[in-house]
Length: 155
Image (cartoon, rainbow, N blue to C red; front, side):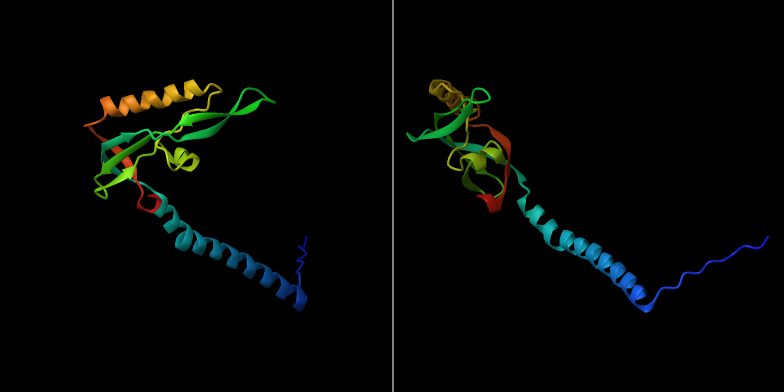
């Protein structure tokens, strides 16, 4: 029994369309690599923090109060107040004094304060949380060196 070979022949327009489609897919993949290696990678590296040794220089609690939003159920929201705690440290990476932040989220929430307490309905609970950290950094950590992470771009 003989096998029948079927050959497909595309018209010139179909052939050009297929080549154009493959060329566009290849250009898209190439541009993703260029974008990833040339632009995105250096940007992400500049956002990374470097470890440094820090020592507490001063712990301040200015009189300024800040608002935070608490939730107490599905339809219950409110605002509360908390005092600002500023912890200034000297870090070995830049050998300069900088305001310490507990993490990136706290930096975004309030760049003026080192610590933003979990928002409670009762203002006194918020104040007690801040006072606890103030006491901790004043008495426990005051003269000790500890590891912190420093980012020159986000000073």
